[in-house]
Image 1: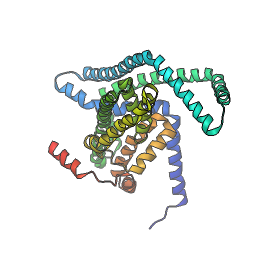
Image 2: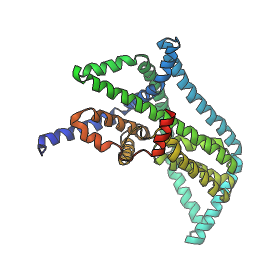
Image 3: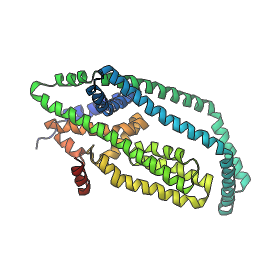
Length: 359
């Protein structure tokens, strides 16, 4: 077997470092563009459906953007309405929270011999340290909010232009390839479009199921502001694996604070049941192995995404790795990398049978 020369190894390492550097330094530009790219693939069938019914391209594109904004507005509206309801219950929750803190202080004093005065002193010192940096924290919050709004505006603008002139960008990529390679490049682009759109739509269906299941289950259990807690618990599930644990902490905390310790187990049962159904039935049906990524590289994508792009990277790097796998699968020299990235876990036979019957 022909060994790699030192210059070849150095070239590949330099390319990897350069790529990571570009991704890190260019995140203010690349993150909104990546979100808009995935959303454009999701809304492309909607735009095509509108155009087949006689609506012009630009009006179909504007309607898709308006639909996107309506979805965001509806979500924010539900959150706001539930938050307003939550604020009415805050005095009662605060009373229970105070009682819980007093019980915790008594338990700490009994178990570790730390008096309540020393506990309060330590708490005051922590609060004073926090208040000393409050101005910087407020600036960070306002900076994050302005950055989010700026990013949202950029996503909307990119989404409009990516949908409006979508054939131009596809033709541009095809023109970069030699004539004999264009069929392979066209096939790769079709796979990337299909996989990304199906993954995102499947993720939204999964989140919708979890929100509905959580809302019904937590309402039956008696958790205060069940709809708000359900939405707050569902949002982190955009991040694979980790998001379910992060989101589940909010309903459990609310059950403990606004209810009683007896509500913890029923609330936990609702969360676990929803995740079991979602992981074993909903996701295999609506997504399956669409990304075809190995589980270990899914985790690597989440960790690497957080290091480079933060929370957006944890969401975006999984489909990005899937795009890399598809590209490697269409370049003979990179086939080993596609083999390394692809999923080695076969899709369950019952999922294949259901999908076959559903066409």
